[in-house]
Each structure stands twice: as structure tokens, then as C-alpha cells.
Amino acid sequence: MKNIVKSIICVLLLSQIGYAQKNTFNEDKLLERLEVLSSDKFEGRRTGEKGNDLARAYIINEFKNIGITGFNGSYEHSFDFEIRAGKFNAKNILAFIKGTEFPKKYIVISAHHDHLGKSGDKIYNGADDDASGVSALLAFAEYFMQNQPKHSVILAAFDAEELGLRGSKYFVDKMKDSDIVVNINMDMISRSAKNELYVVGTRYNKTLEEVVTSFKNPTDTKLLIGHDGTDGKQNWTYTSDHGPFHRSKIPFLYFGNEDHAAYHKTTDEFTDVTPNFYKKAVKIIISLFKDLDLKGL
Image 1 (cartoon, rainbow, N blue to C red):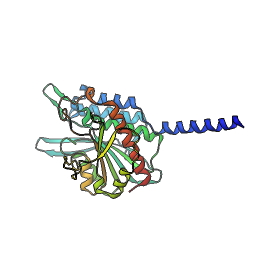
Image 2 (image 1 turned 120 degrees about the horizontal axis):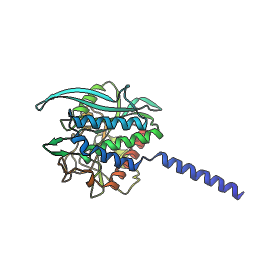
Image 3 (image 1 turned 90 degrees about the horizontal axis):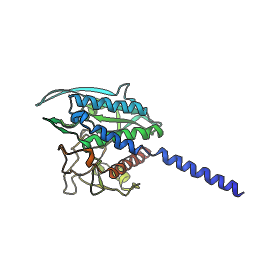
Image 4 (image 1 turned 90 degrees about the vertical axis):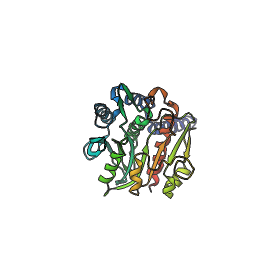
């Protein structure tokens, strides 16, 4: 009898270990991809320039290696725009995971793959802004290979964020007849000396507020609601690619850390990110996604 009980306990423990493994991502690859994306090879990833093309090819290849397909048969989705600086051809990267229960309802998880490029021989590598968000998108892709979501998910690496949120504006307009449940946007999530991650968007949606306030944080990193126009701090409601979703009345959660001395400087380098904070930030965002996917809006 004792042997039978021991066998049952072993099976339960192994099943729990297996479940835990299914809810993880490769933390080493998270940091490795961040380092690659913020390397000099990509010359600051400025929209329309060679470095942006190289970075885009790298990201698409990573999606392929993980096993995630492109949206509507393609990873690259081109668009043109014109601003004072000139005419640009840009490309969003979109990957797709079909939902098991709500295949026609989309959760869009986003980051932006472009940055500021070069100035003379100085390179704006943008490790935190926003190679961190793109590497987190790839961590989500790893997670989805083991955990198919209830809602369909679009993993969006937007282009031309630094030129006026152009990629997300184009995407939202293109998807205006689709049922987008919520946008989860990640921009600057790898660097915090205070071990604090902010989430914006709960003030605009009661269900999101309930999901976030009841969230069981799996880490010791502080998740703070703020920077939403209610606390006297800089209002981040429209500062990144979640802005066009909000303008179109699509609920959003934006995750980011506070500006640091390297923001939009050539010193935004991989060597200065805070790895433990970054890994925990990604764990928090994936865990919150799971709550949203389960409950819906």
C-alpha cells in the first residue's frame, strides 16, 4: 500500500513539474536575443535603413525557429507614409497563434522593432527601447508553442514607432473590422534600479482594473498602476504603440519602466539592463496574459 501511495505522489509531483515547465520561457534566450537586437550590427534599427532590414530578418527567423507562423500567410506587412523627414516604406512583423475557443477574437501583444539609427559614427542601439519588448514577444512565442491560448493572438513587432507610432496606426486601421479584445504593449521593460514595473490602462476599463488588482504576482518585482493621468506623474496613455488602440476604443495594458538616463541616448546598451528585473517583468506580463485570456473582456 505504501508503495502505491508513493507511486501516486511521484506521478502528481511529475505532473506538477511538467505543468510548471509548460508555463516558462527560455530566460537565457530572452537575454541573448536582447543582446543581439541591440548590437551594433543593426545600426540602431532606424526605419527604412539597412539595420532595420537586418533586424527584421533576424526577428522573423527567430519566429520561424520557434515554430510560429506569419499572420494571414506573411510575417511582413508593408506600409508607406510621409512626414517632414521624407517618405518611408516600413514593415510591421506579425505572427499568429489561433485560439482554441475564440478564433475570431484577437489579443494583440506588441512591441516596436525600430529605433533611432545612427548619428555620424554613434549608434543608438536601443536595448531597453525597445529591443527588450521584441525579445519578450519571442518569449511569448515560446510560451505559446506549449500553451495554445483560448483567444487568437497576434504578436506584433511594429515599425516606425519612433516616427510617430506609424506602424501601430496602420495596423489598427487595417484591422478596424476585426474583433480585437485587448492590446498588451511592451516598451522599455528591461531596466529598473527600483525593481518596479508600471502598468497603464486600467483606469479606462473596469474589467482590466479587476484583473490587474486581483493579479497574483509570481515574482518579487513590484507591479504598479500609474502614469495614467491620475497620479501627477507623466501620463503614458498615448506615448507608445498602445495609443492608436486606445484612440480606437480598444482596451489596452501598457507595460514599461520609468525613463532613465540612457533614454534616447547612445548609452541605451545591453550592458546596462537589469537582467533579473527583465526576466521577472516578462514573467509578470505572461502571467497577466493568462488571466486575461482565461477571463476575457
